[in-house]
Amino acid sequence: MSSVESIFNLVIWGILFLVLVIKFFRSIRLVPTQQAYIVERLGKYTRTLKPGFHALIPFIDKVAFIRDLKEETVDVPPQECFTRDEVQVEVDGVIYMSVTDPAKASYGVTSYSFAATQLAQTTTRSVIGTLELDRTFEERDLISAKVVEVLEKSGEMWGIRVHRYEIKNLSPPPTVKEAMEKQVTAERNRRAIVAGSEGDKQSRINTSEGKRQDLINRSEGEMQRMINEAQGQAEEVRSIAQATAKSIGKIAASISGPGGESSVRLQLAEKYLRRLRGLARAKTNVLLPIDLANPKQLLDSIELIGFDEEK
Image (cartoon, rainbow, N blue to C red; front, side, top):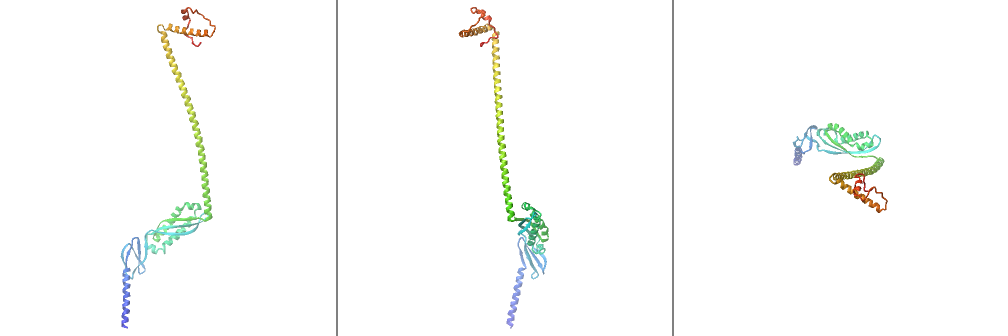
């Protein structure tokens, strides 16, 4: 019996030694980055271990909770909500949050993720209940902001911080979705008809404006042509008048010179005789007030003014 008792005692002491070794190694904790260990001493919270090396008192201190400080995502399950106009929609979302106070996150609430999910659902139902169906699709940012605001107030007591809340799906019933699709199709058709009519209207306006501008350009061109022709005729008349004036001036200068008058009389007499010869060839009776055999009398009878070759 003594040998059995000794073996039994050795086993007991071996077990105790093994337990002591295990407890000793478990009392040494290496906390990773972005984690926090909650330490209890005899069942009472004592401190929060930050990243690094820490030694605990065996059998007295223990790590009760391990909290991850990184940002985490929590899915909000789909739920049925009623809008202000009594339309049922199904909404789900996702919460982005992180633990800021590990002690509050461990002792302030049983499960902060579950509590945040429930609070997000109730807040979403209350906000959607104040909006009509059409506005629920437009006011997603408003719903998200309201949920974040409510979660921030409760998150201070739970030791968490809610960064944002996003609505993933917002689905109306199939009948309402079909009616909305028909409404969207009708609105698109209406816009297409309006756009077509506006385009046809603008096309007609552009065509009429083009015709009007073409008529204006033609009339302005015709007016400019007439102005140019009138100016050309006026310039022609002016040039002829200036040339005639110069010719008359030269003739007057020649007449006033020595022998000028006699020369003019001689030319006029020559023209007069040519005219008479033409009349004679035409067998026309002509009364001669002068004697053609007397040249001096012929020259004296011709006036310097009023004689025209065509008469």
